[in-house]
Length: 254
Image (tube, rainbow, N blue to C red; front, side, top):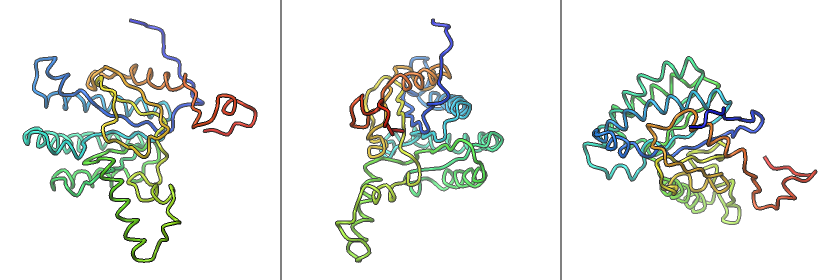
């Protein structure tokens, strides 16, 4: 194992990191446990990564906690997941407040059971005055759902005469997404070994750097997180331009 400390340039820390937290069930099976045990272990990793992101100076951390497709999993697993969200929120919220971490949610949370929804609302209220890292929990979320909702809103505004079709722009769509007001992710991390984005932030990650790791989420450590950031910092972000344009004296890419 390489014991060399991971070097991070504090001047180029990604402002927004999004994470697909994958591999909980497979981690549990590899340890001879039930799948739900993997989700419980994964909560510890959430705490670890929030701490690391906050210490690095990351401004936004978006975590894919429960997708709309997850509703199709076995009912007992869905129930266990939603109950775990309640338990985790109630346990972690005091620490979030102490560490000045603000909680936000994106997704179709109206579908969530009352217990989960009410617990979520209490945590949102408790952390609303925090001014440090903002953690966006993607709950009952899918990007296609989000984009369809934005399209419906645009169609309704056009039909009512509030908006002209020729005035619809990228900014229009941005303003109608659940991430409105949040900068697009600089870095998307996916744990668990799969190399796909699974209906997550499809509009927002148009120019994000993608980082895939085989490490299952419950085993994802602070060092793994720092290595993902270090890998990001070794890349050149061109946003459709050439290397000369990006690195030249008149470069203005953030």
